[in-house]
Figure 1: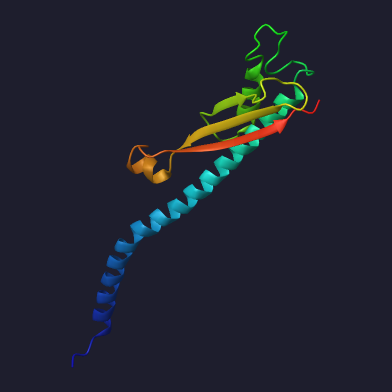
Figure 2 (figure 1 turned 120 degrees about the vertical axis):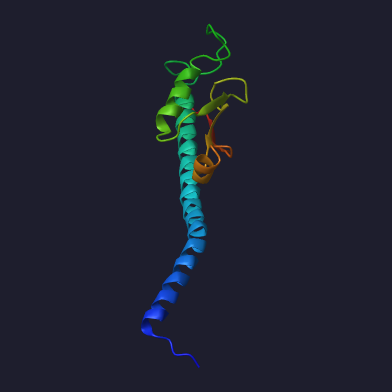
Length: 153
Protein backbone atom coordinates (compact mmCIF):
# COMPACT_ATOMS: atom_id res chain seq x y z
CA UNK A 1 0.00 0.00 0.00
CA UNK A 2 1.36 3.36 -1.06
CA UNK A 3 1.11 6.38 1.16
CA UNK A 4 0.56 9.69 -0.63
CA UNK A 5 2.27 12.75 0.59
CA UNK A 6 0.26 15.96 0.74
CA UNK A 7 2.37 17.64 -1.97
CA UNK A 8 1.88 14.75 -4.43
CA UNK A 9 -1.85 14.64 -3.87
CA UNK A 10 -2.28 18.34 -4.60
CA UNK A 11 -0.14 18.15 -7.72
CA UNK A 12 -2.15 15.25 -9.20
CA UNK A 13 -5.47 16.79 -8.23
CA UNK A 14 -4.68 20.17 -9.82
CA UNK A 15 -3.61 18.52 -13.09
CA UNK A 16 -6.83 16.53 -13.20
CA UNK A 17 -8.90 19.64 -12.51
CA UNK A 18 -7.08 21.54 -15.24
CA UNK A 19 -7.79 18.83 -17.81
CA UNK A 20 -11.44 18.59 -16.77
CA UNK A 21 -11.75 22.37 -17.01
CA UNK A 22 -10.20 22.35 -20.50
CA UNK A 23 -12.67 19.69 -21.62
CA UNK A 24 -15.77 21.28 -20.10
CA UNK A 25 -15.05 24.96 -20.92
CA UNK A 26 -15.96 24.88 -24.66
CA UNK A 27 -19.23 23.09 -23.95
CA UNK A 28 -20.06 25.52 -21.15
CA UNK A 29 -19.29 28.57 -23.31
CA UNK A 30 -21.37 27.20 -26.17
CA UNK A 31 -24.27 26.67 -23.78
CA UNK A 32 -23.99 30.18 -22.32
CA UNK A 33 -23.78 31.85 -25.74
CA UNK A 34 -26.74 29.72 -26.86
CA UNK A 35 -28.81 31.05 -23.96
CA UNK A 36 -27.78 34.64 -24.77
CA UNK A 37 -28.52 34.15 -28.46
CA UNK A 38 -31.94 32.68 -27.75
CA UNK A 39 -32.75 35.65 -25.54
CA UNK A 40 -31.47 38.05 -28.22
CA UNK A 41 -33.54 36.35 -30.94
CA UNK A 42 -36.72 36.45 -28.83
CA UNK A 43 -36.11 40.11 -28.04
CA UNK A 44 -35.58 41.00 -31.71
CA UNK A 45 -38.66 39.06 -32.80
CA UNK A 46 -40.78 40.82 -30.18
CA UNK A 47 -39.35 44.15 -31.33
CA UNK A 48 -40.27 43.33 -34.93
CA UNK A 49 -43.82 42.40 -33.88
CA UNK A 50 -44.16 45.67 -31.95
CA UNK A 51 -42.79 47.69 -34.87
CA UNK A 52 -45.15 45.97 -37.32
CA UNK A 53 -48.07 46.73 -35.01
CA UNK A 54 -47.09 50.40 -34.91
CA UNK A 55 -46.81 50.47 -38.72
CA UNK A 56 -50.24 48.90 -39.03
CA UNK A 57 -51.63 51.40 -36.54
CA UNK A 58 -50.19 54.25 -38.61
CA UNK A 59 -51.78 52.78 -41.75
CA UNK A 60 -55.25 52.46 -40.20
CA UNK A 61 -55.16 55.94 -38.67
CA UNK A 62 -54.18 57.42 -42.05
CA UNK A 63 -56.70 55.44 -44.11
CA UNK A 64 -58.95 56.99 -46.74
CA UNK A 65 -60.07 59.73 -44.34
CA UNK A 66 -56.62 60.43 -42.86
CA UNK A 67 -54.11 63.12 -43.62
CA UNK A 68 -51.93 62.14 -45.43
CA UNK A 69 -53.88 59.32 -47.08
CA UNK A 70 -51.95 56.06 -46.90
CA UNK A 71 -52.63 53.07 -49.11
CA UNK A 72 -54.67 52.47 -52.23
CA UNK A 73 -56.78 55.40 -53.32
CA UNK A 74 -58.93 55.75 -56.43
CA UNK A 75 -58.53 59.55 -56.65
CA UNK A 76 -54.81 59.73 -55.78
CA UNK A 77 -51.93 60.13 -58.21
CA UNK A 78 -50.44 56.72 -57.36
CA UNK A 79 -53.32 54.36 -56.54
CA UNK A 80 -51.09 51.40 -55.62
CA UNK A 81 -48.59 52.74 -53.10
CA UNK A 82 -49.75 56.12 -51.88
CA UNK A 83 -47.48 57.25 -48.99
CA UNK A 84 -46.48 53.70 -47.99
CA UNK A 85 -43.04 55.08 -47.18
CA UNK A 86 -44.60 56.63 -44.09
CA UNK A 87 -45.66 53.17 -42.89
CA UNK A 88 -42.16 51.82 -43.55
CA UNK A 89 -40.70 54.76 -41.62
CA UNK A 90 -43.06 54.06 -38.71
CA UNK A 91 -41.88 50.44 -38.62
CA UNK A 92 -38.16 51.17 -38.85
CA UNK A 93 -38.29 53.96 -36.27
CA UNK A 94 -40.04 51.67 -33.75
CA UNK A 95 -37.70 48.71 -34.29
CA UNK A 96 -35.01 49.96 -31.92
CA UNK A 97 -31.88 47.79 -32.07
CA UNK A 98 -32.97 45.76 -35.12
CA UNK A 99 -31.29 46.64 -38.41
CA UNK A 100 -31.82 45.83 -42.11
CA UNK A 101 -35.56 45.41 -41.80
CA UNK A 102 -37.67 44.41 -44.79
CA UNK A 103 -41.21 45.80 -44.54
CA UNK A 104 -44.18 44.55 -46.55
CA UNK A 105 -47.48 46.46 -46.52
CA UNK A 106 -50.55 44.76 -47.95
CA UNK A 107 -54.21 45.68 -48.27
CA UNK A 108 -55.94 42.27 -48.64
CA UNK A 109 -59.31 43.87 -49.38
CA UNK A 110 -57.78 46.10 -52.13
CA UNK A 111 -58.75 49.35 -50.43
CA UNK A 112 -58.26 51.52 -47.38
CA UNK A 113 -61.87 52.29 -46.53
CA UNK A 114 -63.61 51.57 -43.25
CA UNK A 115 -63.80 47.85 -42.27
CA UNK A 116 -61.03 46.89 -44.69
CA UNK A 117 -57.83 45.20 -43.50
CA UNK A 118 -54.22 46.35 -43.47
CA UNK A 119 -51.35 43.89 -43.02
CA UNK A 120 -47.78 44.92 -42.19
CA UNK A 121 -44.98 42.34 -42.00
CA UNK A 122 -41.45 43.11 -40.83
CA UNK A 123 -38.54 40.70 -41.19
CA UNK A 124 -34.83 40.86 -40.41
CA UNK A 125 -31.94 38.42 -40.49
CA UNK A 126 -30.42 37.22 -37.21
CA UNK A 127 -26.90 35.82 -36.95
CA UNK A 128 -26.10 33.81 -33.80
CA UNK A 129 -22.83 34.69 -32.06
CA UNK A 130 -21.06 31.34 -32.68
CA UNK A 131 -21.91 31.59 -36.37
CA UNK A 132 -20.77 35.20 -36.53
CA UNK A 133 -17.40 34.61 -34.90
CA UNK A 134 -16.61 31.01 -35.86
CA UNK A 135 -18.23 30.64 -39.29
CA UNK A 136 -18.10 34.21 -40.57
CA UNK A 137 -21.88 34.63 -40.40
CA UNK A 138 -22.66 31.61 -42.59
CA UNK A 139 -25.68 30.57 -40.52
CA UNK A 140 -28.52 33.09 -40.35
CA UNK A 141 -32.13 32.94 -39.22
CA UNK A 142 -34.90 35.16 -40.56
CA UNK A 143 -37.04 36.65 -37.80
CA UNK A 144 -40.52 37.92 -38.61
CA UNK A 145 -43.15 40.02 -36.95
CA UNK A 146 -46.50 40.95 -38.39
CA UNK A 147 -49.78 42.63 -37.66
CA UNK A 148 -53.17 42.87 -39.27
CA UNK A 149 -55.77 45.43 -38.22
CA UNK A 150 -59.09 46.71 -39.56
CA UNK A 151 -59.58 50.35 -40.50
CA UNK A 152 -62.20 51.78 -38.16
CA UNK A 153 -62.52 55.38 -39.34
